[in-house]
Length: 320
Picture 1 (cartoon, helix red, strand yellow):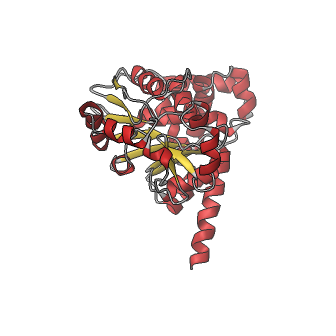
Picture 2 (cartoon, one colour):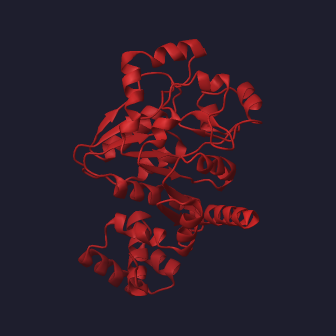
Picture 3 (tube, one colour):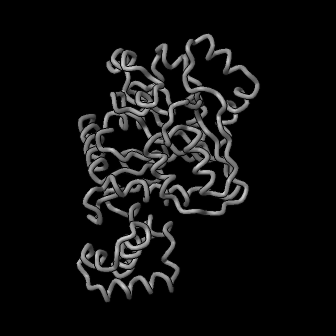
């Protein structure tokens, strides 16, 4: 859906005012228009039904850079934050934009798989409340005992609450003390049923984690610093608590054998898979996730989008 310039300015004004809570004078300053114009645009937005945050996301997917990235990656839809210069820090736009995109993607009756992390919880924290009929939100990996707000069960239940949906938590630890114990637990009927049902999801929401001391799998106690130092040479990122290599393949290591999480074949079987990348420092892990074919839809900053597009275009040119 294309927007005429007059419509774009109305959408941008509504996005800044209603989603980011800017005052009318701040919106006017950001868009270089008068405050009277802002008031007029906001009134038109209300009268024409534009004050619907889901509508505003089209501005981010119709961007030239978004189309360019879709072409080089072969994804269904890409949304790019920060290209319009509406925020000084594009990463700050990501949670609100991704939450709106996610709400657009959730349909009545959907079964939604959710992995955890700071980005996912930041989305849940700003997500608007929406009544969806017959939606179930499913936790994709085991839980953590650490007292962090972005642990798996918290992410799942908060998103379910925002959707007025049913939430299904995973009542098993993310990481067990031994591969043998993890293997036995995966065969327990309740756990096996939940793992087997992941492929039945209609939509998945996740981010990709890094392998460094600031990684959520380290901060939440799932992975020790000693294990991290060993795995950093081989691993490239973290998907649903599991470490992948640079090709997006599950790393053959003791840590992964001790993890309780949806297998990658089940995750890839989900038809719509939304990956949200907030930090530009996640370039390497993002490349790994893309190489593994984990996502069909992507939300990134303009700086990450430019870097990804340039990388894959250069790669394609070198192959010719």
